[in-house]
Length: 320
Length: 308
Image (tube, rainbow over the protein chains, first blue to last red):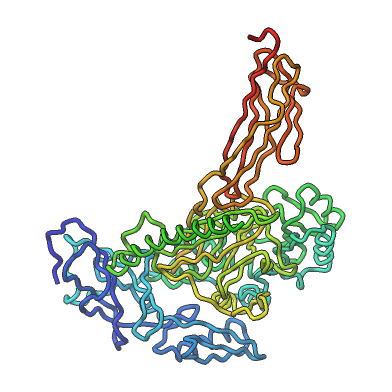
């Protein structure tokens, strides 16, 4: 397939549809049923004939059931609680049950483009642009958008399989797995929409209760309390890793970058997290809604201090 | 009231119709394959804010138009979450919470079926964001989360805001206007992006302010001009635009005893000291909940003995 030379200088944007599972991943020339911009007639595209399934994180698997089995192993390892997962076809999800009965549901999606770069040689995958489609197995998937130069680019598809260069190692380490059970509870959302008051120190608990009780306003509320150190480290790692890799398109860093991106979107961090020893010790609370004019006076009455009213107006900790 | 409701319905209907036209264009573009790449200058999602007073509170309603290719299951109002560097939460006036968590009390909010809303504090500032999230997606992100305090019978999952659709069931009540609710940014999980868009004002029409001068109009050769002014304001969306306390200025320096005015039933009673060469201007401002305002004035030129 040769692109018409009557369109010099134009960029073509090709979206390539996944092929069905095959034993060896390779580019296969097929008629492109998807997106071709600029009305380029007859454009073909190359497809990578391999796929995996996405169950929260990326799980390389041939079938959804296999993906759920792997998810069970990962969940068991991450929380250190035996967990069994079964694929539910009607729910299109892995239904996982922890020992003790706690049940979670993990939607399954095909992640057919995750194993290797999807764009043909001399075409570049546009970062952050994906086209949602139904994958070959019938589950949600996403396809990359490829950018190439029509005039200078080589024919796409039909040629020899391009050599796959040896990937260079990623210099940014992957996000570390948490092991602290309370940190894992935070990460899994036990305190989303509330605060971890139960792990505050005795002084922290009484100070928090006093601050809230002293203000007769329905809009006064603790928005952060005990925050375990490992969880704080995790948030810091998410920030640092995402900022290090956000423009990195190398295959070697892809898994780390994808994981950081998921965490980046999930946690909505808006500034570089600064680990707080007071929160990690259970001696600090962040309280919203306290009247600004009397907050310090109220804190003093409650045996708390607000060390930096300007930068962190909600932050109080025990002591003087 | 019926008239206001009709006007409001018509306004929202027109908005939806307009948005649908754009959405139809986006859908057509998608069908021809152009949608994902052609529109670098057009945000794939529009968030339009409507504000009005309801009783003693202000209701903000958000219309979310998804022109792009990804479903939306999480929407944050008042959050700027950049890919690089520092962002910010933007809202300052906190809605009433449910008393135990930062989930918003059901009577203070409205959400699409299977969605719920909470206040999110992504930093240690006093600002926050409102986070609407589809409950099934919430369970995916946080599988160990405590149960969301839902009304009895509420569904445990809902539909996302799908591509080429518009949803207007996001609203919140707060006790006083906060400009950030209509002028801030919105953020959402969008495909593999954290997408920021500028919130657009739905109501861009200023209130209509009517003034009527009556009572004892300025009498010649008197030490004081005494008269009444009735002021009323109407708005295309906000049923009760705020009418400011009148302000009196003049082309000469005013002393405290030169101007007296008081609120009366339906208006204001003014007493202005007549001073040679002095012209007073009484200013009224009507402001709707979106922040659109109209200034209207009443001028009075002093008439004194020997002044003409």
